[in-house]
Amino acid sequence: MVTAACGGGSSLSSEDQKVVDDLAVTVAASDDFPGTADDAECVAESLVTSLGTAYIQDNNLTDVAAFDDWELFDTEVSRDAFKGAAKGMFGCVEGELSTLVGDDADLEGLSEESAECFLDAFQDDKFLDAIYDGGESDDVFITAIITSCPSAFVDSLVVGAGFDREAAECFVDELSPELLAFFLEISSLPGDEIPEDSTQELADFLAIAAKCGIDLADLG
Image 1 (cartoon, one colour):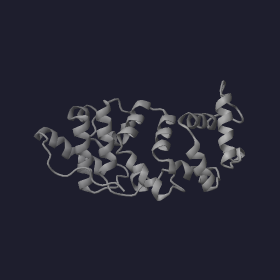
Image 2 (spheres, helix red, strand yellow):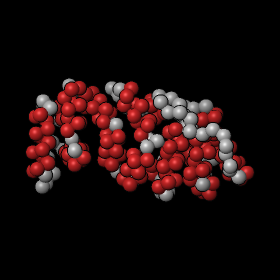
Image 3 (cartoon, rainbow, N blue to C red):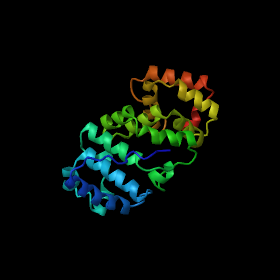
């Protein structure tokens, strides 16, 4: 559960406040925004404070269509600006994960613990630093999520691969960051293809699977 990150005490200039007010109207009118008018004001203030009035105006973000097309994770801004904007966007609205990320997100089988962890992750500097450094890499995003919320990885193995929960928890506990990267790599390859020069990683991976009682056929 996320809680409101804004609340009074603003020292914005009159020009900045005008942009906040205009942007708040846009946020509230945007597709699938789940919050209240106060939540929209909080998001708007966070974006203006983090990204700057000039950025908002240069990207026409007070226009609903432009705001709906805009993606923070594809934006070239400073690290601090990115982190501040992300924390505001995910921290200003109180609600369930399914409400915040939209109906198109596949959250089947995600436990309450994992859902809350996802939300908390977007307030965590280490997680946001990893996302920022990874740019548009899906593997970096997945690795950051798994590292921050191992219970979500367990849930995905139980639901997606049919693992027994105890075996899935064992598997996730045993995976080092290097073997996690190896797992993600082989999961994306066709058939039985294995990356070159990965004999040791494969041996370590097989040992963990055997220790946890996992049938590798379940991995597809």
